[in-house]
Structures are given as structure tokens and as C-alpha cells.
Length: 125
Image (spheres, rainbow, N blue to C red):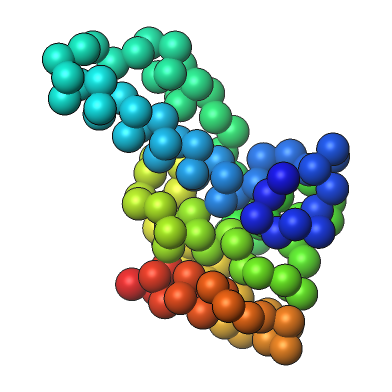
């Protein structure tokens, strides 16, 4: 289930935030292994390398890789991919900047609430 909960979990593919979150989680696990003197796990590395790249349209990230690609009437969770988790090879900072500017200009603001505003600030930073 993606962070934007109105998407159908049975048909939704490759949500942008969740892809970045999985990459980061696997990276943290690898670093913990290294800190204990264990080698990086090759299977986990393979998963990281084979994760789908987040879907884009017109140089902006979409929330998911299936239609409807982006709804603007809920949390702008796509921004979490560089606002809530650290930078990763999956997320291109200039594309995220374009995405952030698009959110600023085109989001349906009466539907935004709670953690939406701190996420925007963290992504902008």
C-alpha cells in the first residue's frame, strides 16, 4: 500500500516514495553488516540495483508507475523520496526540484494537511 492510500494496492506499481525508501532501507542494512565486519549481502545488492526507476512524465516524478500516475488531492508523497529519506541513486535531484515546483504550483491545497507541509520543507532543503 503506497503512502497515498487511495491508490489500489492490487494494481499500483512502483510508487516513487516507496522505491526510494526500499533502496535506503537496504543500504542501511548493508552498512550495518559492514559495521559488524560482515560483507555486503550480494542478494540485497542485487535487489537495490534492480529496483525500478521512478516513473516520470515531462521531467517530473509521478506518484506511481500506473494510471492514474498522479492525483493532486491527497498527500504529495512523491516528495518523500528526497525529503524524508536521504538521496539515493534512484532519485535525480533536478527532477525532484522540478517535481517540487510543480507541487507548489498545481497541488489542490485544500486537500493538504498534516505531514504534507514538513515534507515539502524537507524536500526543498
